[in-house]
Image (tube, rainbow, N blue to C red; front, side, top):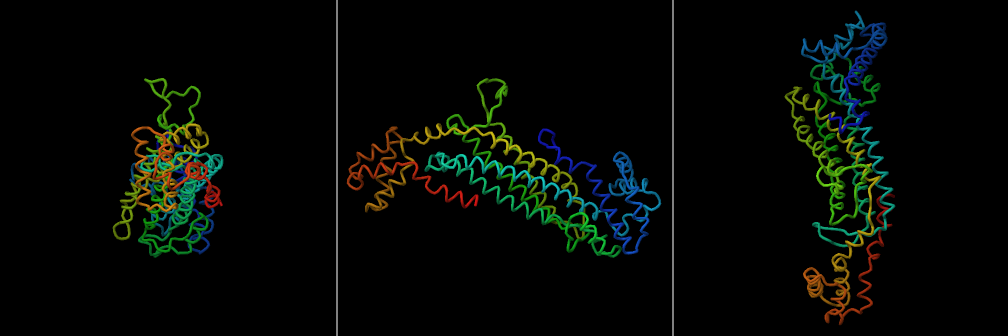
Length: 430
């Protein structure tokens, strides 16, 4: 976790204080269940709650000697609890604590990410509605295509993030599982009702079958969903970066008073925030392959997944949390230039209307092949001679013989391309 790209609430989930707090709660709830079943004295379970505590520095000190984090924690806990600590962790294995804790942390992280996505969706909806009818160029292959609206561009990204939100909800549901099944997952030394009690108290579901560890396909799915969200962040960031290019300049990141764009060139106003988002998306996506490789563990358990998850859990959630918040800020303050959009629409002398002319000719009885040839030969003159497309068509005998000047000029009406904006918005925003 890099402080530059971190926000406190998400960082707190992965700090030792929160982790050991969850460890303690799992152990204490397990003691309650064991006491209710008559396996350990009720007073022992009560004492664990009353006296139970931990010291992070002491845990670290013990771990340096024993080389085992859970044993170090249990030893520190016992120093607070006293003799009744012998009833803690009965029948359990380390993965019962570690895997259930990771499930809690990932659900906590997912809840924050869902809040982030709600904020981003709200920002996108607001700006999309603001520019529903702001006509701009659509581009394919980076080349002028047909007119669209800037609101429709943002609505497209809204729909993508809405899909991402639904995937994250499903991923949260899938990752939120508890396993308290003992060594190799057979419940040989612990009653399954202990697992049921702990799961309920920790807000998790029961893992139907665990082989000492919770199956890692759940985690692979979770991190894959985070990667798809990150790619959607990059998709929107890339669009903004392209539209901010000097030659285009249809939108621009907010440039605050006193901000500097370059150490060498005082005139620069660079898209640094969206460039940053592009890079952060790469970090989140980099976790997918390791998460997928964690699915294949030896027999009932090995720990090859452990080191991976200790890194990608915090790194991915903290990074994505920061990225979603930054993107929301970019959208909220995005400078949008409709006048420049119009300049760009006119840049190629009306070529953006070529399909309407093509269709008008076919409706007038010209074969599609001939119509395409007529439109294209005039369009190519615009590219090479910087001519006006409509003027060329009005002078073309093959066009004049088929379409009236009035009908031809009507084919150059920009608002024709916005007539279904309300229809699309209703489908997206409901």
